[in-house]
Length: 147
Ligand code: HEC
Picture 1 (cartoon, rainbow, N blue to C red):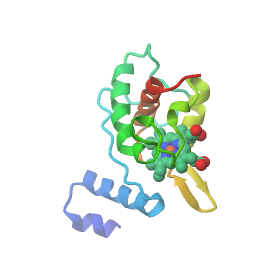
Picture 2: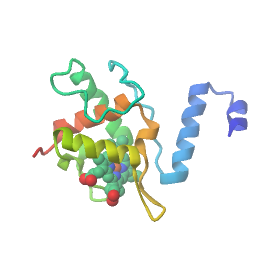
Picture 3: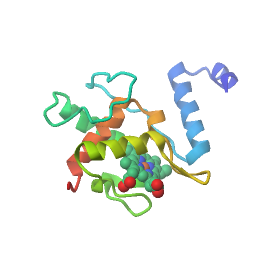
């Protein structure tokens, strides 16, 4: 793989992106898309347990925008456009709001869903920044059925 990168003549970032999609294609037939998180302050390396972009957060609006696009790029193919599930994966509008829902959301996005060696959902958080992942959660809250 390093040979591939060396000979590619591509910029390092492009090569890494290609490598990442190659890995995922091998493990779950998904091509994750790089997510532009402009306007969101870095959240650090440690995963938060709760969505930081609550409606009162100054970056809430920016997070909703980033999240809508990141969702369509990385989740819609299984969970449905606009989070309206076509039935192959759970309808994410049904996720619980607030911290309870945050907890389950972040667990699933980090761990994926693998049973008997079959990848039902890849570990999506491996291919995205924490900001992008919580931005998706923030957007999902805006279309949620609530509880
Ligand atoms: C390759 C298809 C696929 C992709 C891509 C995918 N998921 Fe999933 N996801 C699934 C499946 C299938 C399940 C159900 C897992 C199970 O049966 O345990 C699931 C479950 C979940 C759950 C738990 C839902 C519940 O009601 O229990 C969450 C949250 C979730 N996905 C979020 C995401 C997010 C966010 C993304 C994009 C970053 C994403 N998924 C991308 C297939 C996918």
